[in-house]
Image (cartoon, rainbow, N blue to C red; front, side):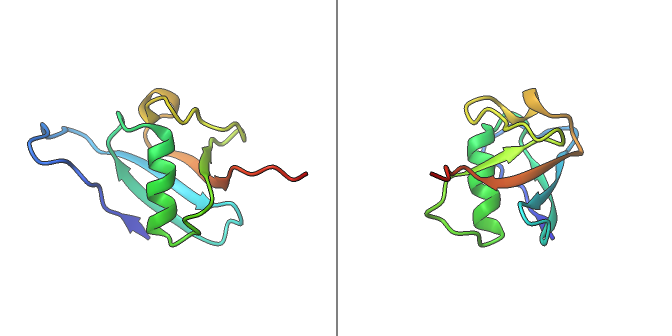
Length: 95
């Protein structure tokens, strides 16, 4: 599944795409997303969760290929390289 990029009107065109290879936490859904590298990671996680119809009442986060959560407040392009693999993971506590 490929999730299209949403670019605000009036935004300058980018010269290269910033793509992520993403999966849900179970690994059952894999997809590619083209994003603005200046988008906050938390916003990207919520957008991806909506696009693949995951529950909207759950806070979602992104983990990198080492299993570390990305910082929701920092730009995604500061934390991972283009074509990185990330996992969409619920941010919940068990107990």
